[in-house]
Length: 210
Image 1 (tube, rainbow, N blue to C red):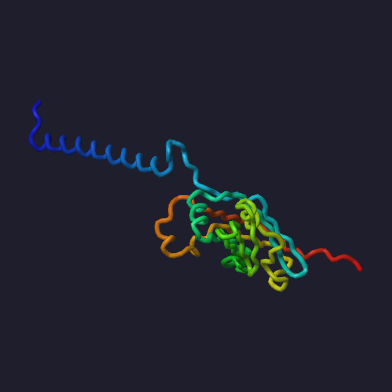
Image 2: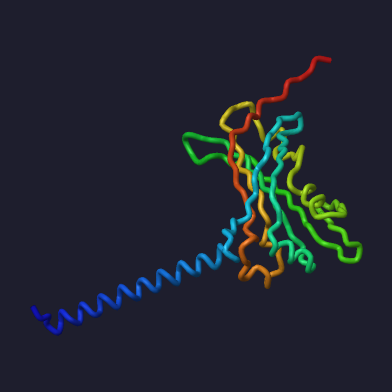
């Protein structure tokens, strides 16, 4: 049975559309593979692992200790050695659950570290809270900023012995502190970040008898 001109046109159009769709899908797949499989090897995005996080109630408030594990990607390390300081930030937000309303915001605290390369002395420098320390190697410098201990995130007056407290914790490579031109079009490797949430015991510490 011979097709009418209209039916023939529809058939031709449908065939062309399917071929075009196949080409688009092929190009999209090629682009994805180009981005994530450089050199034919699957490139995993860098990540930060939380190795330890704990809180302890002391007489002056609530203290936090944590440690992470990560390595710098090649783009970040290259920028560092070209004179671009790299920043890391940790944030701790203490909340309290409430069944009758939104959870209460108790405290929010943050810390930041600045990592830089000193070409004249060929040392790495880590700055935090007005303190500065130099290191001979990058692994030593990174070890000093991957965690903290005894960080007071709440004062005693902010706490009671009730339950329902929880902690929202985050740690990241802070690209917002990079020079503005570098913040545009950052490539893969700068997206180091983690978020974690866990309940917190804020019972008063036991007092020893005199």
